[in-house]
Length: 526
Image 1 (cartoon, rainbow, N blue to C red):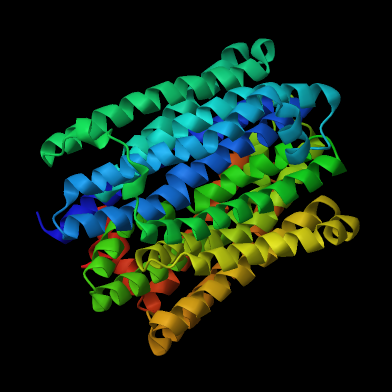
Image 2 (tube, rainbow, N blue to C red):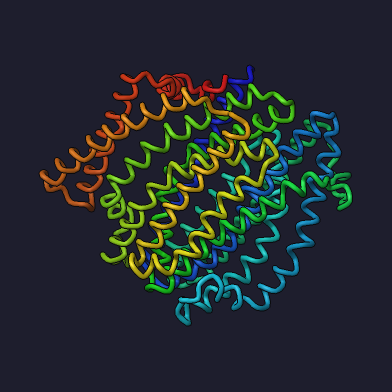
């Protein structure tokens, strides 16, 4: 099988697999809205879950994959595969030693972290958050080993473990909420996360065993952990990434702290909106994940022509997918929120707040998609400082502007400031990488951007007309009429975008045809 077809097959399977987890994640949000609404318990869960988000960023996102994939690529290029695995497992052991004191502290003094994450929680919600934090801190240690193994698997084009584990976690949480949510309360979240963690360990063990046998790597020797064999170059790459993750989590912390102090339920509603925003970035995230091992291999081989080609085509794909997705979500946000969330305990005020948040967060979708690729390009070049600077722009800006934003803009003000700062950060990262490596040709990039702007403007205009038509038909936001209005507006928007893209001769449009007709996603990098 050719390299292009391999990427095509892997990308398609990963996207389909990754799509299931967010869809089940939406069911989680619907179950939460139906069972608990915009309640203090959901606020407590959102606050506590920040600890697991931090662990996911460290061990499944930026740190482990950003460091391990280039590191393993280097060892493989030198014919030292076994040594690369030993280094990876030694890194896991080192992270356990560093993390363990903090985990023990959270287990015995969860109120300290709870006050930091959500000072505005009610008394009952604070106690619920503290209980969840105790158990989530233990899961944090599990994330280290599963994350390192997941990073190793990514180096060998094995991507299924993380999305399957996330799918199991979401599915079990849905079941627990529906069957016994009101009775279990915070214990439902604890049981679901614990169950998913156990299965994640099992999946990782099965997958890494298969890869080790295929590549004749001795797993028993990998567990002879020795901290002295960890390369200093890896540490220089890892330290800025750790800073980046802290900056990212600090940004989330500032937003959630601000919302928790404004009103009960604001944190919960912000989380409901985030789920829809994440759906718009799903396919770009999948593409960036699959591209990263190829970027790392090209960088290790000093093949700058391939690097430039992958970076240029990848970024264009990120924008071609995410920008129209953002426009579509913006125009259908109100009926979308009503159809999915206006059930059971969810109030009209909660629906309005989720819709407002989603309208603002839709502008973050292209930024998130671009960041996925730009971070991978930076890590492949063993440059983790640039992403750190970009994230510090967001974290420092939010810290300075949070008080003013909430004073003058309330709940929407802090979210709007966050969205604006993320745009500034990604623009900085593009300019920095272009000035240092010259991956993007100015003429080609400008030609792509002006055609994309024309397509999006015409799409927005068509969707605005479709919305007026829906109002004229007096279709309600909820029930079957709400679904019909969503489908109509989305259909008009997508058809308009694809038609204009065809007229403007976007190369990406032909590649979409390849995706649906021949299931060969990835031709754009051939």
